Length: 228
Image (cartoon, rainbow, N blue to C red; front, side, top):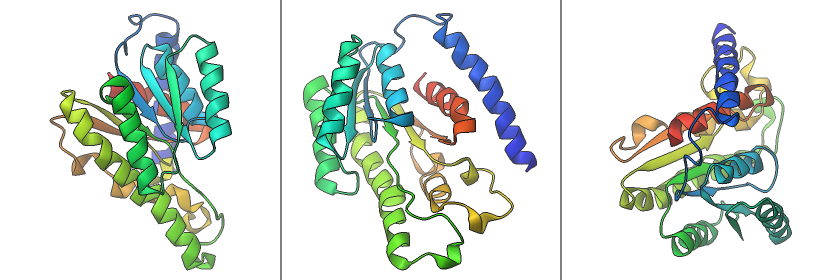
């Protein structure tokens, strides 16, 4: 619990940094001419991240499993004067991941930033009650798809001389809670298996950010630490 409190303390300090950045203390359009790809970005945290990246000058490619969600979000963000396009992508499908990366490269000439936000949480309860099908689904989407998306984007990042990969995961990946078996399965895989030490720091940085509501400020702070 002490580690959790330390993380929350970092989150409070991070939120102050984000508010300063939002107030215009930092330079204008810090992401001008950068290209950002954000998965699961038509609602919630993914949408908020996509909007903020675009507000800071990036060309953002959003994605969702449903075309109507993509169309609605693109229309909304373009209506705000932001450089945003979108495409349907189910991250669990290799062909969709490939099309997403190819679309971003063809439209904008490359990729500088990947925010891997897509994940599933089909079960909440005691892990001893989890079925194999549910476990397989969590691993496929939260771990395998995240790793394969990162693998697909890294070569494009290297071509640009460097960039950032932000993986949205759970704070429990850093500081497990006392009664771990009652946590949603989402909390464990990505941050342990896809770790910054497993990728070459020469070309880009990877940051793991928490999606929990009380730690959204940490997520945005870590996002901007990674991007800048």
